[in-house]
Length: 605
Image (cartoon, rainbow, N blue to C red; front, side, top):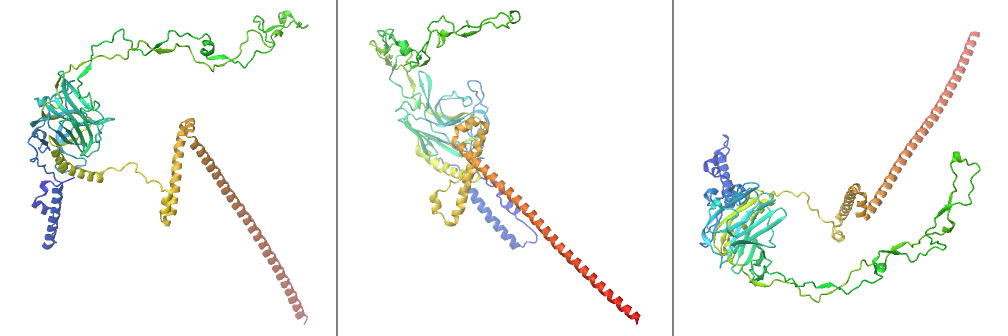
């Protein structure tokens, strides 16, 4: 949203913008001047409607803290950028600035604290004018977060710091009481809530389980945390409660649980050697049945339905083949050339049905169980599951959560994306104050951002299409539109079928077997329609060829008939011409004869 710079709002600049052709009369110039002034008044009204006005915080309690970043720059705002490094030596290179939002902005001139670097660690803090003690009062934390680029990995949570510390040395080891705000990185998306307490002089951080999802849009989003003295908590997003729980009622709310058990199992206790915690033992008196291996232990057994063939010789020493005793050496056999003659082998007549040890072919044992295992019985010496005895919890809670006053707030973050903006930070004891701030600042800003977003949002790549009409829709529709709707419905049906078939064809080209197994019905339907289309196409082509050839033959026949008709007519014309010529010749001959006769007659006279 744009506004006019101050240098354009002077009286002299207005007249410099007015056209001053010499041919205009003074009356026309005055009218144009009034019109320009009227337009300027409207522009000033529009500017005033969207111009940022700092929210009046005089109604807040003296202990409440509210930051709306009205300073010119970071150095004048009271916020101090950390010059320290992380415990692993990584420096905080992230740059900070006070800037207006450029992505779907709200109020013109409304600045916020902006992270200006990509892929960097950020650390900045500010000392509270008045330390806040939330041990027996409500603690309310509220602030706005606005992403101006699509987020892949970025933290945007605030820390409520305690104790005295050097702001320039602020890092992740600085003592804090509460960590709250959105945390997004890859598939992880949550509104982080962490509370710190000291146990046995060691800091223990408990993190909220099943945290609500943070908002990833590019508009301003308001995050609110409320912690009651009885440790009821509320997490609100844009004024709506997203999570409500009690930190002590269930051990599943935080990890590790904030509830400290009075008794714990003795970590030094050892299970006695004579303690028998076996509920079942092997029956030593059980014995393996004598027929187990043959009846139940063998996976394969002889087929009882196949009997030994009649005439089978059980003598294992008999050969299956013997020399033929009746064979006679051929007379033409030459030992020197053919070698020593030996009787050929024949089947042993004693082994016609078979000889040797006979075994029936094997089949799967229907009674197969497996290797014999001794059964288990209840252990008569069973004493139950051993548990270490309980002792009084020796842990000493040095400080509970929120037992120390909050003296400062800070951001200790990592972000892959720049231009994350924070604004309207409230820390205090009053939910009413936080709601008032949200209603009078955030609500109007969000409405303005949404209007700009609706006007400038990118078009979706795939716009949703309306669902096809049902039969009842056709019955209730006007009769004049039924035909066009039916045509459109049929067109959509065929387009959908064509798209499905084309997709199946691509899958079929990649792996035919897998495509057929995955979509057998579609394969049959595709083949049917493909065959139908092929047959229809061939039929139409044949009809076209037939019509073409028939038309050509008819044209040739018509041409031949025309030529024959023309020939006959020409023949008749030629015949008539010949007859006319002969008639004329005869007439001329007769006339010549008559003339010669008359001449002769005149001569005689």
